[in-house]
Image 1 (cartoon, rainbow, N blue to C red):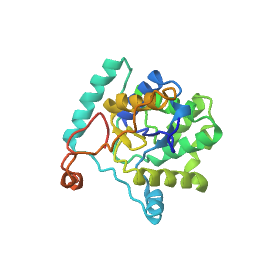
Image 2 (tube, rainbow, N blue to C red; image 1 turned 120 degrees about the vertical axis):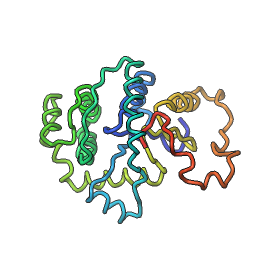
Image 3 (cartoon, one colour; image 1 turned 90 degrees about the vertical axis):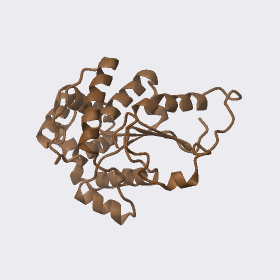
Image 4 (cartoon, rainbow, N blue to C red; image 1 turned 60 degrees about the vertical axis):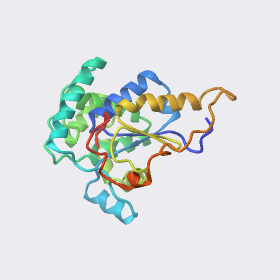
Length: 244
């Protein structure tokens, strides 16, 4: 593959659309983990937010309305049935500590067990409806998967893991990521579960044998009036199979 940077996949342990998109990605492109860079997207806690601000970044995500939330409940139920995925909605209270499971992912990556960790945590949240932000529950989930639950749950206490989390938040900020799943490949960006096909098409084109690739792609925003590009908020009342 010739691009200067590998494809990036921004995912969240919180989002049902991210869960389904990554599952579909693995089914359709089994070596995605070797091709793309996976970056966790998570709302930072106070400590991470302060570090992000000190680094010159900010978090783009804005909490959704109740109407949008209710639509997503219905949409994800419909999509899970379509894909044949067993799903049980977790009951989030609104005060979950999302840095915990996401920073634990960085620790799992350091230990070389991030794929097993991801699978275990996603099964707990989306198939059994468990609260993966509860340290005791997360530790049990990890232990049951044969992982070191105590070590993973302690990830937020390790400064170098915190630093990796802030680096990811800065990547999110610099790439203008506002929701998940979010795929970036060169100049092309794809937000939402139903944009997975476009991302896969871009990957397949890049992986095609030499001499068969299409000409370099034009600016994806070509033809869109500059005035419309600058009008933030005019197009963000819908969801394209993404949380954001």
